[in-house]
Image (cartoon, rainbow, N blue to C red):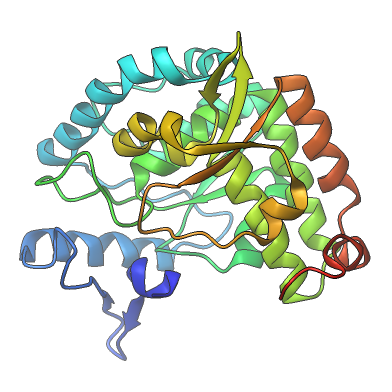
Length: 295
């Protein structure tokens, strides 16, 4: 199954209407109100142009309730399982806990800390566009929330993932610097293979990364820290030492809890290792790193 199938592709009509295509196993598939809302938010994001104010949906009490439920369940688990850098950045950012924040608010809180800003996207953005925008301190975010019948589960990245996971992470200067290096590396790549390698290293680090603190594995990846299931399961994964070639080439299944994770010995080890790769990554380095590996 491809990411485009999983991540609700869009159908554009000649009339200008937008349909978000949900799979028949999506929690919101049979809910016309939810589907209409998804279509509305996707249309707003598609209509947005750089330089315009970011759309500000009037979030409903139901949507605020989803946000509160997720926050309620994640807060104590962050305290136990998140790394210090994430916890400190989360406190610095100070996102609202009782309602859904607007992307404008997220940007206004992030900008003075690390310079990042959030812009809207209707769904899954192309890899080169998504990662490349990091070079300009920009993060493309969805604005929809998961279905209220299952507030602790989503089959696709939603606003909870984009903000509780990534925005809290981006409030850390160390993590924000790594994002920018990823964006700059994208600008030095021309092949799809190199871009895929880079995106997989990002997946196994800034999405699903672990770092040891006090002899214990602590999560820093946005994919772990925005997911009730992943944060409960990650300590039982096969946690391996950082291995950039394995991270860039190991297949993964986005439909299940990640069975293999990679851990740094410390934050210094993490930032030094990733910075060295991202700051020098290009097509030639990718070819040297993967020479002799299975395609």
